[in-house]
Image (cartoon, rainbow, N blue to C red; front, side, top):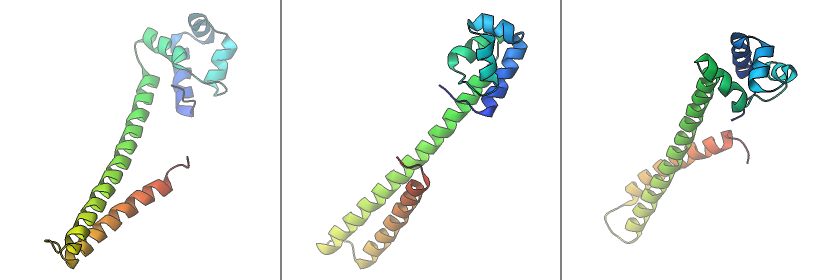
Length: 137
């Protein structure tokens, strides 16, 4: 898990200071003061192998908590995208069912096909808007 944003750097800097400074942290993590300095200043990635031991030693986990929050946000976005997809699929299926029933003279009439068509268009439109707003792959 690598996130090298400013919040993580600030939290790591505080962990290093609370642990006793660059020398103490470098010795404990078995790396150089220069490596610690690069991480604190955002010039090197702060990996779990760096912040984890300091958090454990100090008995608090600010970076782990930050990363868990980020994971929750990503999970929430993924669930929202899945719900849009499922809604579009459901509404499209209902439209197809209404069309088949209308064409075969079963229970559904033109009004039902129009109603289901509008619902399907709305759901597909919402899904397309989400896809357009997302990153290119």
